[in-house]
Amino acid sequence: MKTIDSLEPHAAAPHLAAWALEQAAFAPDAAPSLHLQTCQACQGQVAELQRQRAAFLTARPARPFIVHVQERASHRPFPWFRFLLPAATAFALVTVLLVFVGGQLPDDVSLKGAAPQLRILVSRQGAEATEWAPTVPLREGDLLKFAVTLPSDGFLFVANLDSQGHVSRYFPTEGRASQALRRGEHLLPGSVALDAVQGDELIIAVVSNAALTEAQVSSAASKAFAQSGQRLEAIEALELPGATAIKLHHKTP
Image (tube, rainbow, N blue to C red; front, side):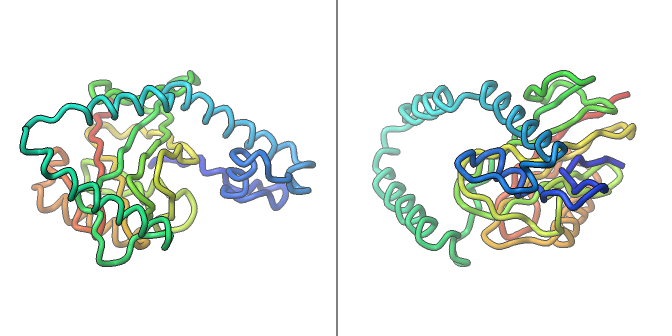
């Protein structure tokens, strides 16, 4: 069993929920609540969120990433590809306008092909979290955090599928349905402590136009596991109305 540090309310008093702690940490212009002004425990969680965000942004600064994307976009593999650009640009502009005006994509616009980007940050033995490389095995006690980049506004659900077919919810840390997020890069709240079970596991991020329940995601993951012959490496996507990003990792003692 994996444990999730989800910024749960403390037992001593009714503390701020995770979303309120994030707002206090990442919206410095907002006036702090009376509870936050007097609660050292919540102040400590806000400070920890700010520290983790600063470390993440230091490890992946926005400017070099934008330059990298622009450099890749400047290479056209085939001369005929340029004739597709006007149509693709027009479609992208219409999609952006729909997201901007409506807050989410309409039901008849599919996210297929616009998969989220999923990154895993690992902290081992109390060290600062760094980006995980697929060739590095994970171990019992490793703390995982997740960063996602959404191509458009959508609803996000992150789950884990192990080699026995068991499905665990990683995000959202509270509630049992996918959570609405704006397009762009997000460092997800909470962390996951890995247990002693060894073997391969899949971390799955699903972004959709409408909220998906934990039961829907779990059922789709179990179905994919069965259809793959219980081979995690053969799973490429889930049969869900959305787009999927998958990370396969191996866990050792």
